[in-house]
Length: 153
Image 1 (cartoon, rainbow, N blue to C red):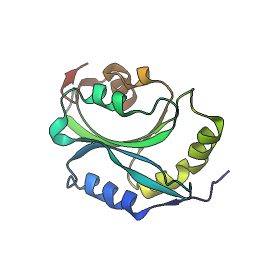
Image 2: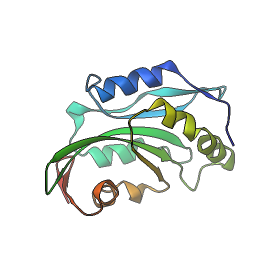
Image 3: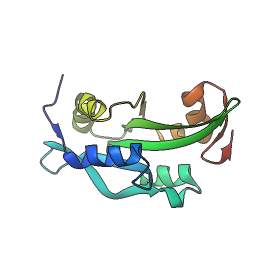
Image 4: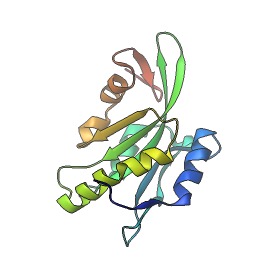
């Protein structure tokens, strides 16, 4: 079921800047315009590269309690073989969110994925405990991650 919403140009511009490492952002949040016709960048809901310390605590603090959102994270991690960096797309959909919001975000997720070409890691998360270092590391590389955003795993 498609929702018929459109991805605002600001989303694709920010994605390209993050992909090319020109935005200075480690994480950016996206949501719906007030009329729910466009997916837009949520201004002020971001983590900058210079604010990398306590990344996961900061990320959890920015998550809405009773609403959904999309998140694009630029994650740096070390495996046994090498240092890697990936853009990861997350749909945050907490259990406490109204069913109407959950349906809107779920039915519009495909539009966001199309606006983020080359992003191969797409996750859905439903509680803040999913945003701990060990859980993210496991999702990234099934136990091979030694360090994630400067935190040992």
